[in-house]
Length: 248
View 1: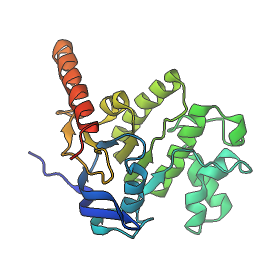
View 2 (view 1 turned 180 degrees about the vertical axis):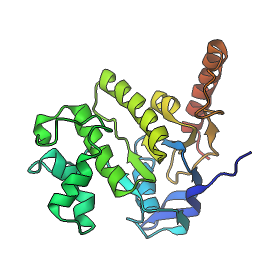
View 3 (view 1 turned 30 degrees about the vertical axis):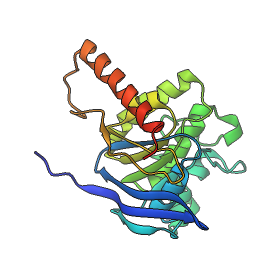
View 4 (view 1 turned 90 degrees about the horizontal axis):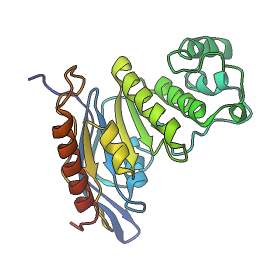
């Protein structure tokens, strides 16, 4: 068995707001190449947990290990409306000290990989919802090519665009070797995308259940038996629902 390389972990983390305990005894791991979801209802502290993991919120106890710089994509794409697409996605290079010309050249080489060819000089208002999300993914990837934290990145998209982006994300995760931690409140989204799923309990305080395994042979060519997969998926749904609505 190949040893797992941990790229992000959290041990015994607790977070207070004032006197109120919000997150309790949080433990999680993300391995190289994995896509792991944190699933929970609104108000359970998912975004607060992400802020602690990225280091944006340092007022929490416990231990956080970050194996590399983290690219953090918020619920909104946060594209700058006065900048063209190419200048939006080139920002990580500019912030690293590159000239505008060099940054544009480096960013432009990735546009076709992310399905953005021919769109370099459009403004965000001239892009579709899916194109805007892919631009935000690219900018996040260029900031950190190893580790991405995605906070409900598919919110507000129609079902067809969302399905297309699911396929696109899984394909490019494999091609680019990215490790992804995803926040979602959508059970079907978590099952469709994840290798493992952590469920955040109701709170306050909220805590994480031990992870549920979704894909046992991530990246394997053989396809599971459809009937067996349907049964496993339904069992997984039921267990997720039970965990969501159980206070621990």
